Image (spheres, rainbow, N blue to C red):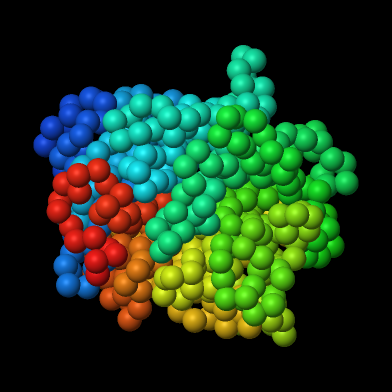
Length: 477
């Protein structure tokens, strides 16, 4: 009798898919009125999503404010599930108890709040859902204050911004609260976007979704700053094997995560360094105007000189033994790398969401790094010594609480709060939580059903018009 074998890779992928969908399916079955999901999300979003809400709240240990949430369908675009349940991306603001204070019908890729109560977010998906048509600023009431779409011409001849994953408004280096570093009214905006190109020296594929950083004035005109990632590939530290893999199969490490072919670097965060002690000590690479970025597919962080475009500081992509980078452990698929702003605990250190999962470039472009849990790391950018780290390797990814395996192979963010706590969003697990320096979870929000989380930001009470929950102002504390 002939023995039949079953490909183990297919089995593993099937089990991972089932595990990721299990909470979604259970949320559907537990809800007593599934028809409610067929209505477009309204202000009472928490009641519309079975099992959503705050599960942990230690008022004495939290940094009390409002939380700006980016909610995305599991897959961008008009998929079957999104159509059946009428689920669309949205941005919302909740209080510490999970009550919805405000909701905007935007596409949070990500969403950020200004000190006036206005928000900046995307509108309209482009290129299969991986880019935004417009980057738009709304006031508290949802009126458009500013919008930009004149970077490129996209489908049907429409102008598009092609923004993805990040942007920064002038005046605030990281897009979240930093003492004394306020957003400039009507200021310039730094935008992370795509630029479709063909470069035989980078890859033989016809098209690359190259990452570009450009800058736009309030009046919609572009400044003279433009940085294209592919033009600096020789500065990124890839070995010969990785370069061959990228040439043969750019973006290969992300295709198992449904990222498009040709998405070679998948840069997912950009921010200014801002005022910092390292520059004051004479380290020119940490000029406040320089830009730090992280590449998910290629496993590196870099700082670029805004004047020359050169990479002047880098960690990764190789974290081999006997290298300085080895102190950090292997970083895999990083997100939201930034320098903690001056005035916050840990200022000057690099804070990064180290996803794990699979990433990097092997010989044929396939992933060459793997890990089944996530980390948040704070480290000294001079010595590369780890200052603080959070991880949880045990438990079940589908459960909330302290017995929870902390793991999301995509998405994720970390914000340093004024009291020294860190707010973390765990994208595919639909969970956000606040953790103390001693790694105690003191606030947790869990979102069920078909959403994934794209960056949560804690905002000060005085940024929210009327301060409806009457929280004490941060500056008073």
